Image (cartoon, rainbow, N blue to C red):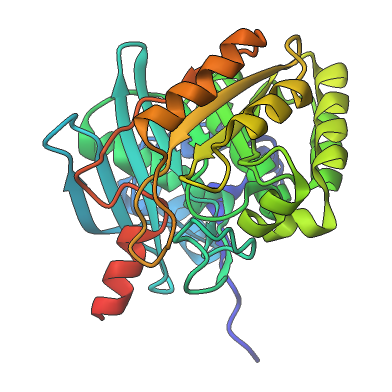
Length: 347
């Protein structure tokens, strides 16, 4: 007979946990106690001191608790941004970044180990795709970073390593877990899901009652440039992507954020600024301009101040809603995948 596979208890919703406890002849309130312990960051069932020894042993035989190991932590001397590299149960590694703003503390987390999308200016996909993260492995990035930093995290951005909508079911489960009042209780409106534009998944997401913000990594207003920067665009197309985003807005009432990394000589011309203004609907969208972070293996560099001003002057002239995203952690491995890649290659 084979060894019984234990289940990941931290990826289980409270309703499912209650059903399990009833099935083993326990009271439902025990599920609430266990759920609460898990979302406080306990690492063993033995830490759940208000449960009987017998019940703790029973849980230990049936389930396991995910516990990441901190491999490296970088702290920016400029703005205090902290980048974490965690090792998972199978020795794969993921990054997350803690950023402090006047409105609270935000964390940018990973949703996959590696990435399939192959965006040419990003380090996340350089070592290929390994696997999806479980809901618990996403939750752990927030939970253990909050415990390490002793800072209450109020905003979560799914914009680290990986394509969140390519790991759709686990991401939806993660959102239910982190928003639960008995868990970390992060408001759904304080969660941002970033995607390079998987149209079918955007339409699927619109069918869920998720009040989170959708961020589209656009980076170019024309198919030729975008397909070079974001290879997934070859099967999508800018027009199709904008139409699906519009459908999302009409169904949810949630305004779309479009991310646009300013890259010298690639997507920062005045003609592209004009195209971008025509592309975006003022009522349903907001443009987030980002100065490209340096990736050692990439040939791309950030736009100059002069190019940036000429570009934004056109946006202003055309009444396009935009903000220039504040660049944090410029003195550490700030870009997605850089720290993980450096440590991998060191090994």
